Length: 266
Image (cartoon, rainbow, N blue to C red; front, side, top):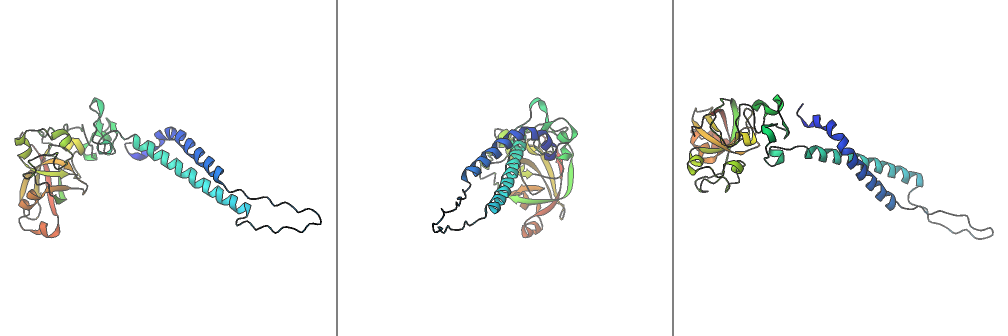
């Protein structure tokens, strides 16, 4: 299985040394900082007893509190080590700064390299080197994947004002497509993509979508240059306005659209 839970068991043995070191250090420090309860000795015979102040905590009560604190420290250290080890195992995609896998392996939605269907299937949100998805930055293949009733918001890329520079707008795909010819970069309007169907990450960069307003039927072809997090599309504001022919999208801040991957014709 390709999910974070699958990797917990495989990374536990790696986490244990970290757990031992963290908890040992924490408990040693707690021990060194533990308050010392003063001993109360009996006064000599025929001498007036000295009145000693009563300690704020009974030794047994203090011991129980320290034991509870030790348990909290141990559990926290184990969780921190486990999640740190798990995170370090993610080696591709958006979890690893857009890195791709060696030997043309697929990058799964969780950021792990592999060759199984869970890693490579675009329908399972494969991020790069997906089967049938093409490599990042190519943009030539059609694919035909499609989705309906998808939410689309808009983003102020303003490519004309920014010289059609992907770097200037900090687009995710600039890592691979920043040096594409100007004609390639300005051929279509821009969009960020995080839809329910189709490749994600580098595998989506440069590919084209035919986006249709479900309310009016107005449609436009756009090129994927960025990622998003709304579960659909984040169209450049110019494209958004061109397909928002009845103004409802502007009024409500989003449109409901259909999209299909199409051949860019590059």
